[in-house]
Length: 432
Image (cartoon, rainbow, N blue to C red; front, side, top):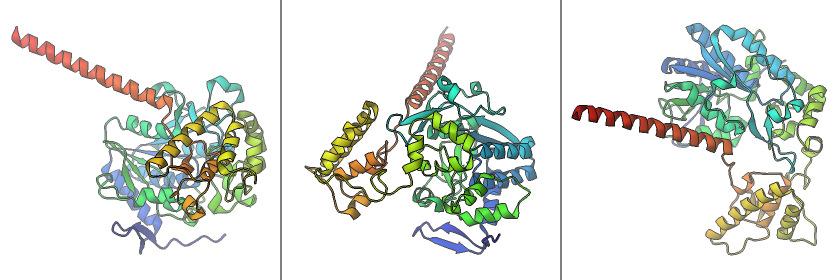
């Protein structure tokens, strides 16, 4: 097998946000970045999913840790519905580095998106109330959840990522290695090129300040997919996830090979693969949440079935009428969600001068989100875009996260009252 030669790496120029190249391999550059993090941070942990990118990052970080005889944290957020090959691979990596890692294999109840069903728009991994439907049993190495005083069942995955980092830091300067690459998506590219004055470590664009003591580090940000496979191909003695070889045999190009929880808005595109690659896992996925079979059948189709590319409507309906018709076919919980978000969308554009929302707008303006239309709202429904990201809206904080913030605030308040009482007592003693 021929691997792409790694001969240059790119960085982001602050003035013009253009990629430029210098005569250094991405491998060498990443090793230097990781080394500098070990120099500057008291605590370090790696977010490890078992995917190809995080696997390469883990191997590079652990190489530096072993060289320095340091122990680093490894965070595995296990979302239950995963390939069995991935779990085997994760265990192989732990076996290899066990003496140099502080393992946190988190198997808690997390609220996740189910983009293949309007009747069950969200699901909870490791739901204790549905233990008989779990895709698999919790691994023997899973962590005791009682040690995580921040954990509240049914918090969101994204919320957990940030809260864990603050908890793990214990107030010490901490770096979290995250295996993302800027060429995977425009969103990730922007995360690197955006101006982050005061929010970087030592001016490094590949770092982001998360809190007073926590920084995220992205040492692989400028790697291409080919670079990842070059590294894994040249280091066959290191564990790699065999599920990717099966994906290649199934005809999936390396640029489209992803590992995530299977029911998400983007991840549902690979749901059909479970049927081919791991039939036993597939049968359990079918029973776990609603909509899996139809989602796998139609998610790769074009047209109105899921709002990809072009959408159409009945000729005798306007887009506004079609939107309201689609809403009327939904279960109440999903219908209420869309109504609330559409109302926010309409009010927002009316404040910008639109007395009436047009039925549709020029395609190029709709694609750039520069004009409102009822067609955009219809498309959100057809795409099962539950959070209406196509309308420029964001995912709200979960009830569990709001509860966590309330508990944190109350603890701080109690601590303040305790200190104030101690001061009052000291003043009274001085007076007497």
